[in-house]
Length: 153
Length: 205
Image 1 (cartoon, rainbow over the protein chains, first blue to last red):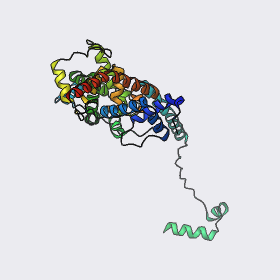
Image 2: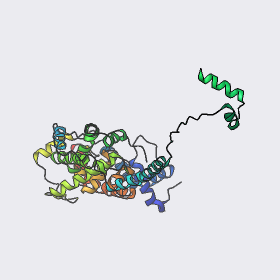
Image 3: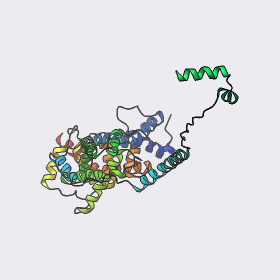
Image 4: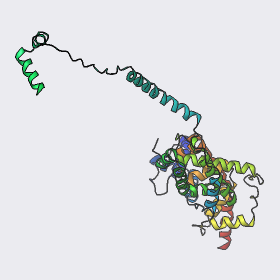
């Protein structure tokens, strides 16, 4: 089956993309392969582009000269950046994050301050007879007497 | 967004004291100085300019690090600074405008020519009908800085379309369009060389 000539521009774009892939990658899609077989211009351009891409990729990574690192470190020592300098955007974000936390902390503090402090109870020693104690307590006179004896040792 | 491979170092820089920042800077320099220098060298076509651009790039990283907000990867941010520094260097030292295709190539000093020759690889120097690596490298220097930068980032540095777009703050479509224009320009530069090589090959038969 022949390639559709009306789709030449579309095929050419796709062939350019395909030429970007590594030469060891998957082959062309069937419709592209048909177009390459039918269109000498696209076949030549694709082959040249694929080869040129491979050569550009093979260009060497060029090595920096000796001494460049020392030069850069020496220059960087002169420009120690400010310790806490932050961008305006980050500062706004930090404030937005910190505000609710600060509000929550304030509420907790207020609650703690309002908590009534325990008042030390005054101990009052009152002389009373066993009968008087019995009237104001749920215990019998025998129980009260035993407790008093125990307390006195 | 993918996790940044430099995240641990970035955290150390942000959270630490002066010693931590210095250690993080040293490590980032160790990881990236070759990439920055090589990019600058290919983009500027000159070793002295590339050294200046590399120095300026890392000093800007040191100075501006607190403004880096991780909206892109650290490497994309670094490449962007390097590309901008290369552009700034070119504007400051604009002496030899890039010639149009078909015009005589920019004259080079003997030192520059020897340097380029030393840097070349010629894996297919014996192919009379093909383009040699040296010719491709020469042709690369004839591209406009904008097109040359895209070609270097995409092919020499091996960045994806998306990464190149992030570095250059443009769309992926713009990256593809510039690459197509770069190939067309390279084709114009390389076609005469190919024809001359074919003629020489034919005469030699």
